[in-house]
Picture 1 (tube, rainbow, N blue to C red):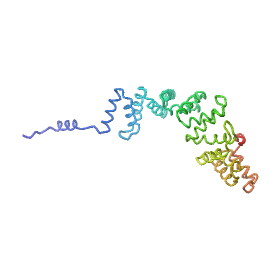
Picture 2: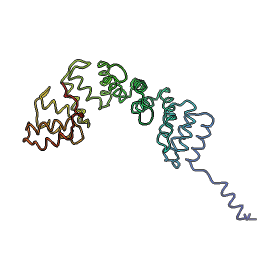
Picture 3: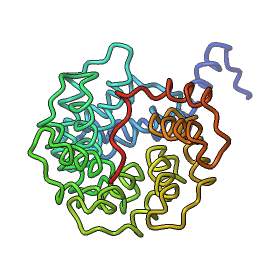
Picture 4: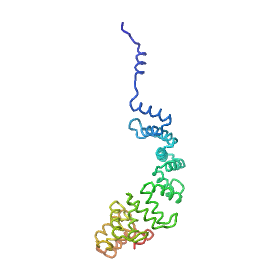
Length: 293
């Protein structure tokens, strides 16, 4: 005898037999594990919601699970949570600093680097050069090349510590060799002048060229000046002028000034006092640092 089911009972059985999607089932399993104290699974679940690839993107849920992992002393989770909090419309910078500190103390070098940048810039928290130097030092020791460069620049300027050209040179060299191109130009200046390290004009020129090709306009100016004066390389006025032009167009004041001198004196180009005057307007005296020696 055939069994006839009522419409309501049929719908109930059908609903009861529905299975969650693989992504939902995975998320549920990770949540159970996270709730039991697995920091790694809390992070795995946070990343699912942060990426929005397997389940709909949900930054609030991602933050919640990163928070659980951070509270379970997983330092990378503290760093990720700090990133989310810092990007929020109503960011809590005190919380960001605490989270980055926890990440840094837990071995996340980028946490130390970000703290150094925050304390140095003073844009989002109160400026404090001493703390900036401390965190840059920790990040540099852990292998963050940009932090070595930032600390090297501070040591070279003597802010907030006493000037130490030898230490600054070592830090800038570590940064440059570590792939942080912004430090190659200042290092080249030190190699050319012998400040803090033995003179090496040939290596200095190569570093100026490398930094210039990577987009460092200050290095383009220095490289152009070497070509203009024939220091460590054959004199090449047209190439020097091209580099000054490139730098000036990018807003490098010293390049505008040098290009102005070229046009004023007719050194390698037809004399053009009017253009020289326009170029000098782009490079007021206060923006011009002394030429290299």
